[in-house]
Each structure stands twice: as C-alpha cells, then as structure tokens.
Image (cartoon, rainbow, N blue to C red; front, side, top):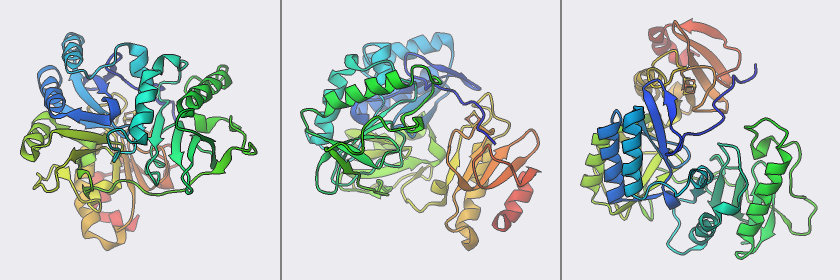
Length: 387
Ligand code: SF4
C-alpha cells in the first residue's frame, strides 16, 4: 500500500501550522544550541501564549503548541527578542541544519555551519523538509537522522560532500565545502523543478554527483549516535515520547544549573557541562528505557488527522516492554493515522489508531496492510507478547 499524502512542509516560527490543538510553531536555534535565558524564555512563551506543551523534534528543534492567531503574533515577537528567529522567512526555512551534537567552539563542524549560515542567501528555494547535516566529527553520528546533503569525514580523514542515500561522497576542502554544498543544492533544485514539490534527495533516480569522479570516495558507514546519559560534553536526556510541559522543562533547567544546552535529533537535549543530575521521571536518561523503543506521533487531540490518543496508549504499553523478555528488543510504532509521521520506516509492531481501536501491522509501515484490525487497546495490552 502507498503512503497517504503527508504534509509536504514543516512549520517554522514565521509559518505556523494549524493542528488539532491550535497553531504550532517550530523554533530552530542556531547551531542547535540554546542559552539558559533562551530556554527559560521559550518555556514562558509556551506557557503564556500556547497550551504549555513543548515538543522536541527529530530535527533538533522545539515546537510550541496551542497558539491562536492573536497569541501567535505575541509569541513571534517574544521569540524575536530572544534572538530565536532568523531575519527573514526564507532564511528560517533554509536553516534546517543538524550538527554533530558534540561539536566544539570553532571546530570544523562549527566553522562549516557558521559559513553556511552566512551564505543562506545563495541557496535556491528548496522543499520544506530539505535539510543539511554537518556530521564532521571523526565518526558520523547523524546517518540515521533526516538530511538531504551531508558533510562527513571519511575513514581516512577526508571531508566528503554526500547526497543522502549515496554510498560515496566527493572530497572537498574546508575552504570549498560550502560552495560545493550550495552548488549541489542548486543542481538538486534544477533536477526536481518538474517533479513533485516534496521530492527529497534520496528520491532522485540517479545521484547528482558522479561515483566515477576522481574525487569520489567511499563513505564511512556508521550506526553511531549519541546515547542518553552522561557524555563527554554533558548530560543527554529526552522527554518521554518527545514531549514535555513548560513547567517540567523549567524545573529541569533550574535544577541542572546549566548555562547552555543543545537540542539533539533524537528528540533530546544535551545539558552542557552537567555531569550528574537526579532527574524527574518525565525525562529519560537511560538509552535502554523501553519508552525509547516506542515511536509515537502526537495523535489526538493534538493532530487533526488522528483517530486516537497515541501518547496515552504508549504510556500504557511501555511498562509491558520493560516487564516482558519476549518484547526485549522490539521496536514499536504507535501512529494516529496511516501517514506514519513518527516513523516513516518499518517497525516490528505498528499500531495505527482507527475510529474503533487500533490496526496492527507486523514488520511494516503505518500505511501497510494490517494483519489485524480494530483491536481493543485492552486486548493489545493483554496479548502484546503474542503478536
Ligand atoms: S501520523 Fe500522527 S501526526 Fe501524522 S498526520 Fe497522522 S495522526 Fe497526525
């Protein structure tokens, strides 16, 4: 079965999206980093102008939900005063840059990202979901995260410009990398001019770069990421199912005493220089916490397309994953509808909300053919290890 049409664009601070609980806007802090004042300010904005809920996205961004047209204007101006909005809507749209989260001031990742921010005007108009990954640490850690053009380091230390989906990249120097990236973005833009507006790099039938080019090198394949818990740079944690309240987030910030934090594409936050923290159960700091194995979209009432309460159901299922060895390594996906926004890949078990109960898909996508339909949530909970 083919995937139902998903939204082809992402909300920004300039262009909020209407959702089931009002308007939502997305904030993409520069370098994926927030100062304490900015983070506390965001919490206040969510509380004062939204419904107090804050989403952490897989694009290292945060979303404020539940705005009205009148409160959106106030929220936007408060974000501007915190320097959390680009100068123009087009810069904001093009600023979807993921950084390898352990970058250091003035290292290669930081310098390349700064150079790209300085040259956003030179990029063409790109699809709303298009993004860049500056993954130039010794080993790539963002390969499982969504991006269309990547800069990575090869095993022998070369800087490579890579189209998402390709197994090779073209060697570039630190000085030529951003010009080459901009040129590749222009070639992509030309190539998709007559295609569907939401085409991504990985959907192109042929790569734009030539694998036979004398500067083409094999890409380093890496399953690495930044696990939750203590890291060299600070404490990495995540709100359960990607969402928290402004109050819980504020409490965490005050208790941690951090000065800066980074948003990570695993719906997490890295509290810089915080090495120990006793955290409230609403945040997860253990990568093996079963809640990390459940991908869940906002569901009802937050999303207009949702046919059921996904997060509530996920919270009921999580203890079962912990208690049952048969479910030890299973990845679950709970989706409010067949669009499957939270996990566009296959999962071991996918539950898709319907007007009555949930459909079950085994080892498939949310839009694939279910093997059971209309399952009652209680029946699912009683039989989870049998599916
Ligand atoms: S998958 Fe979830 S978030 Fe996406 S449209 Fe459906 S209900 Fe909404």
